[in-house]
Each structure stands twice: as structure tokens, then as C-alpha cells.
Length: 161
Image 1: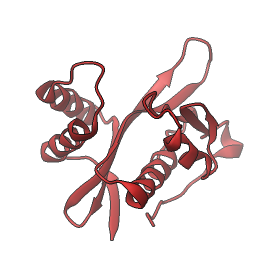
Image 2: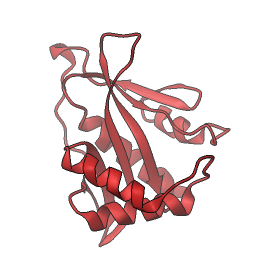
Image 3: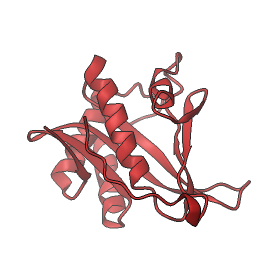
């Protein structure tokens, strides 16, 4: 059975970085030790980093934080990193499960939950999956209204399928 939770240990962070390194199509250098150090600092600062487990093995992870863009007065909750070790149907399930957990944990001060996808996903498969789950898609970016005010506040717990 799948379980999604917030990251709490350095071992989890290192495993997440290794998953990312195994799938990354880097156009910039990636340094494992710098990645681990930066994510460790982020987790200590209570930034959002979640993992999906099946048994004792991490399947996918997602890192997000609040972002205030210069053209708006609202704050967004934006994904910065996402990685899954799976392919095919399992990878689709990971995208859905992790993004529902991400959405359900949006801070109350955030208006939108944003997943920028990847510019390497030329067919926008990633954001099309999210679109099929109720997200609005614009190219390789998908978003959902999180909290426009008290009238849209929601409470929920995500149980992965």
C-alpha cells in the first residue's frame, strides 16, 4: 500500500536526490552533495518536501514552496522539483498521488497551486495528466485555485490509489 508523507530524514533526502539524478535531463550541472545540503536546509526551514512510499521504498518526491510573483499581490504554492522512479501506469499514478497531496497541503495564504512541468516534456504529458484531474493547463504549466479566500477553503486528506 502507498503512503505519502513529509520528508523528515537526511536518508530520505539523499534517496530523493538519487532518484532525480537517475532521471534528470540536465541542461545545467547537478551536484549531489550541494543538492542534499540545500534540501536539508529547506526541510529544516519547514519547506514542503513530500515522498511517496510503497513498502520501504521511495517511489516519487516533490519539493514546493511559496512564491510571490512581481506582477500580483497573491502568493502561489509552486512545485520546484518532482521526480518518480517509475514508468508507465505507475508513473502516472505517482504524478496524480503526489500532486493531490501537494494540492491538499497548500498553505492557507496561497491562492494558486502551480506545477510548471518540464520544458523537456514536449507533448506536455505531465500537465495533461494533471489537466485530466481538474487542473488548468497552459503548455507545460498546470495550476489549480487553492484558496481565493475563506469561501474556497477546503480540508482534505489524500489517500493514494
